[in-house]
Image (cartoon, rainbow, N blue to C red; front, side):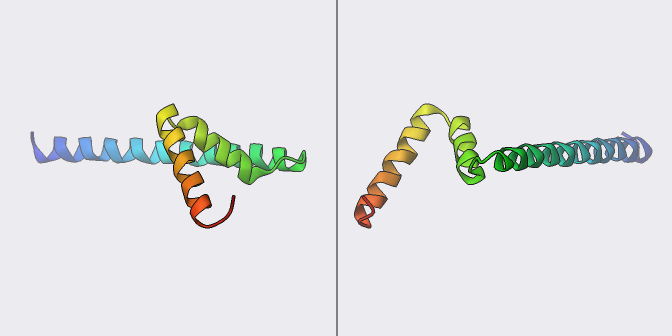
Length: 79
């Protein structure tokens, strides 16, 4: 591969990444808007974020995390 072809390929990769980063920023702004709308309707955004995170987890990972949380809470007298 010549230096010119490699440089062109690298430039194309960088430009694709830059476009995707812009799209990601736009999507992040849209998500923020949805959370703000939910908050203005009386929903607790922190709890919603937790639910979204939990729903992304596989069931066995979620069960493991919840069991560990319960163990820690019990050890600290938060039950």
